[in-house]
Image (cartoon, rainbow, N blue to C red; front, side):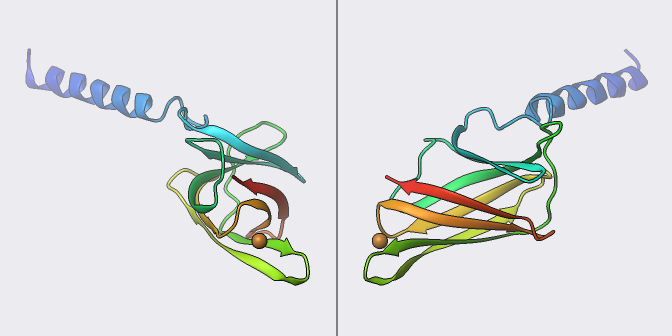
Amino acid sequence: MNRKNVFSILAILAIAIVSAACGGGGGAASNLKEIQKQNAGDYVVTLLSESGQLKNGNNQFVIEVRNSSDNQLVDVGEIQSASTMPMPGMPNMIGETSVTKTATAGRYNATATFSMAGKWNATLTFANGQKVQLALRAQ
Ligand SMILES: [Cu+2]
């Protein structure tokens, strides 16, 4: 086998490995369960995590933004997040949330710290001004 053939085989192997790692591209990370899905204008926003649930305490999850027309992941720039829990006769409780971009357009890593079980109202604001309201339940 000459030198050129070895390089060709290595290149093919590298492409095969990258393709496998990306799972065909554009699909949801396969081991994650859906927490919630919400339509917002031209977009579909999905929250995903390993457990498929949010809990009282620290949460890490993934947010995917897709075009509702073709279901492809779409980059909406930075996402601002906020969450509150209405408390009867008291000021709202504030949940600490953050959303950061990943290397994959339309896929974001998110964290949320909820200091009480129950219903949390969350708002995601995309860089283009689109707002998404979510009613989340911390177990
Ligand atoms: Cu509360």
